[in-house]
Image 1 (tube, one colour):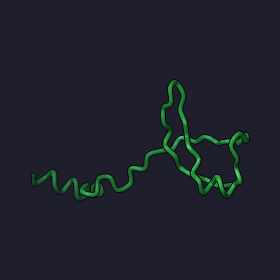
Image 2 (cartoon, one colour; image 1 turned 90 degrees about the vertical axis):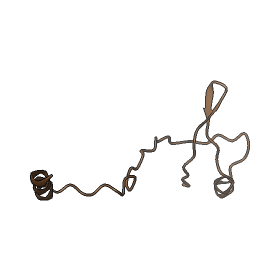
Image 3 (tube, one colour; image 1 turned 30 degrees about the horizontal axis):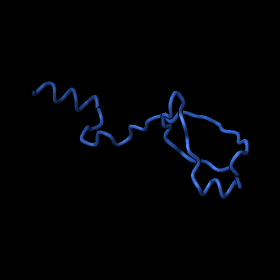
Image 4 (cartoon, one colour; image 1 turned 180 degrees about the vertical axis):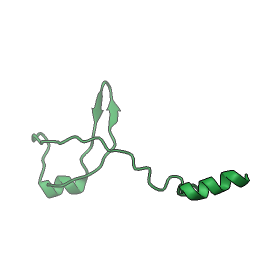
Length: 68
């Protein structure tokens, strides 16, 4: 089973997802054939989006609040 991540595009009132050429060749898919798709919505990964924020530390936060 081959996997890929593709973005859905609107065509009229429907959404279209394309199958990349390398997967078409690997699975030997031909025009007009029926294929089975498993749809899973991707979750956004927010890791690293705010590198300027420092980790929260209870002791450091309490020490800062006394002197600021």
